[in-house]
Length: 162
Image 1 (tube, helix red, strand yellow):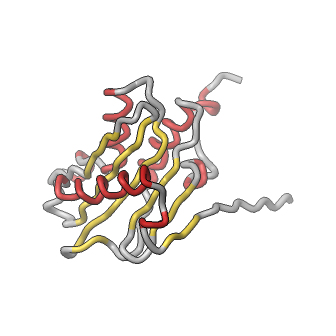
Image 2: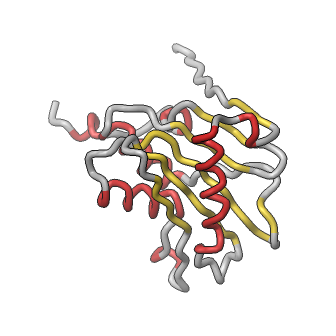
């Protein structure tokens, strides 16, 4: 037997003021767009904003549907839009905010498994890490890449004939 250890590094900040201007702007946009969420069933709004290497910022919010599997998370809405609108632009950073009970969540929420897979695919597609900023009222987390959210990941290498 071989035992392996997987370590994920997460930087924790007390305030967005500890970030550079570009990241602060991205955080503010993610928070400002929270009201674009369509979440009448869960009452849990999520917003994601992505900074691209062409200086564009794209955003998305969760879009629910009474038939739950038909909805889509904010992270995937934003990334799919970025990939289709600016297919040559690398995503550099994604900022994610969540809002419920008339306020932003206290502790940041991470992306769901499906969103992690989609974000990882974009990281692989562009051969470049995507920084992840998870926004909460009392804490903000920073991960240097998506791979750290999904260390034992499934990717296209598994689909190649051997």
